Length: 74
Image (cartoon, rainbow, N blue to C red; front, top):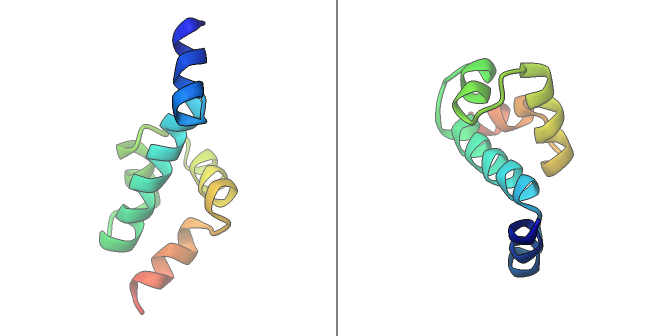
């Protein structure tokens, strides 16, 4: 309780929100710079469900993993 309160006070995010943000950032970098499958990237950032991975990326960035992958080719 106290940790979460202090963490949010300092960062502006709950610990869970911060962890999700870090996972999304790392996943986007991997989508752009690797040829790993969506499932491999999801697993490497700690998300075991590829469908949830797609939803969370879209929710936090406004783009799907596929849109980031297309960007890799440009």
